[in-house]
Length: 598
Image 1 (tube, one colour):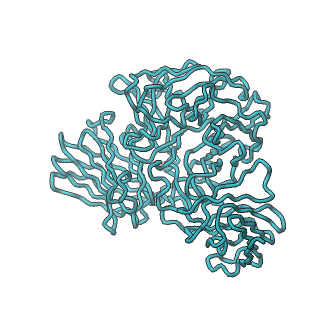
Image 2: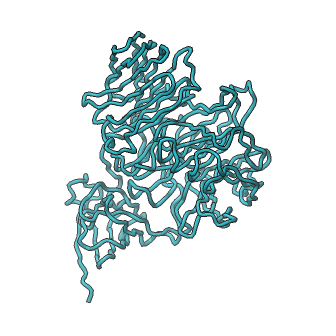
Image 3: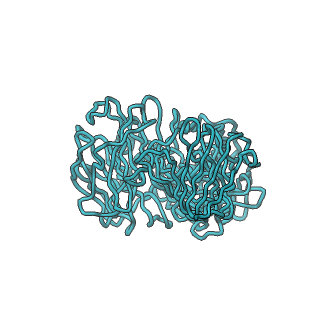
């Protein structure tokens, strides 16, 4: 006869919760590696204790739909890192959740509890004015579109842990790209596989047959069998989606495994899909968004090689505000192969004839959109005809699952407007934070400019909260070197070094994570696209766990994570050699208020 352990855990015994769902019982029937958990009452969530160093356990609600597979969750074996919610079926109990793969003596079985609203701890490193998920893991932004005055942002999402897995599309929306409202999961992992990255468009003409104004989303279904492109549509402005019965709509003709991340856009009277295929991108055309024909490819041997290409995008932009015509910008996110290791975003400028892309520059030339370690999966919103807005994942695959921010992991970089400008006979891209950010200014002050000689320094105080925008101009004497240092009362610092040829960022003394070589390395960006004649205009956006630097209107940018023990509260200028003049320093506090989470 099987040895079956039975024990009842009352949520009233859990001192870590606020008695949400009090009076309900959790019955755990454990038989070796398999367990059945029965919940009485009407609570919405079963709170699962997570241990990131544990192994994955298969978890599935007994009443789940047939196309919903078990989720892979790292339940606590011998210690608990945090709790995350597992949604329960609606209505009165009993509700049954089945578990497979965790032994009966694990600490998880005595640590479950129920609630109607997860009460998550305050996180020291949750940004003030950057988008983050409510909880769980986030990576690539997906399916971004603008419709009826609202921006919709989807993202690669694991609701059941702060490490990669169980890929869904999470969903947030905003009227101003700053105040984000969190919505329920939009696309859930199914029997075709994980829901990988993709895009969404609004079908105003109903060419797809899904309804006038339907939101049509394209995503990669990933499974052990391979990757294919699928679609789903929504008739409620992207809140809920119906997956197309004819999926997949695009499959690889040559069986290539890394075949993913479709970006769809309108071109004349057709729709074009560009997607990543290992070390290149491939193009497809459709009249109805359902039936797709292969038209061409681009990329083998171009840019930083060898690098796996992901999350492509193709947009047409005016050059020099339209004074020099139009060009196409092909964005490709590479991992590994970034300029300083791990993941990064590169781009190509050229022409597009509706079938394939023709690059203007030699194959070996690489243009980086951002020179920091933490700018990846940059893609643009559809449906914004008057400007092109991109968002990126603010992390790096080298250490993304190690950053100290659980029970959520990752933020998006600031939304940025993309533009093209000409310099030295070529066309380049700039990116500037959206002007909506000015609405967040709650306090500011300006310090007078000054000049410094070698060996001198000057320090300015920052606003206490440390989430701010810093603006100033730097003029260097020939062959001078200036260090701009942000410091805090714990002795931590992050430094920007300008030497007239490059801008470097050193976060090796910035706090947590600096014991990792791949995190603490110094990054550098060439200044040859920026104007030394009038000095370098610097805009620095500082948040609780990030720094984003823009020079001369975004002709150069550096994006990196920071995890200091306390906010940086002073700005110090140190001339290492030569002389420098610092223009008026303006410090603007950026205050958003609580994000709508849940």
